[in-house]
Image (cartoon, rainbow, N blue to C red):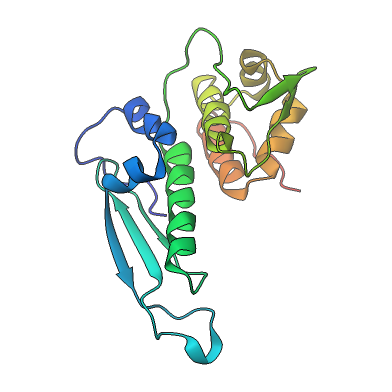
Length: 182
């Protein structure tokens, strides 16, 4: 994933974030897709088929790849997941009056329950980072706005290294120390 990609179309960040709701086909329609041969798994069969996938998301400038599998379809799915993650990590949106949690995300007793395989997972990542950025890196203020405990946010961020890195960048910018990783 390219860090701080240029937004050549000057689309507002909250508009780019709406791409998290797009179907795979809608998201792919906004991408330049490059299929190529790459080293990777496959033993004696490596480099015999064009299975690696590179996606360049034109509206945001984000570039992601998928090369782990010998299957082009699996690599495309991985690249799309990475694109959604990049959009969630890179583009901040302003906070609304109250958090708008996706239906498949469960909040009970100020605790967050969402599986990383849940299609709404990157919405949650984006919402947590938006709150942290809007509150200038103050964990307690972000947690209060989200209706979560601070420890819930820390545990959630610790499960995703890239999200934790971005959260620590936001906190550093606000003059706070880093959150610890597991």
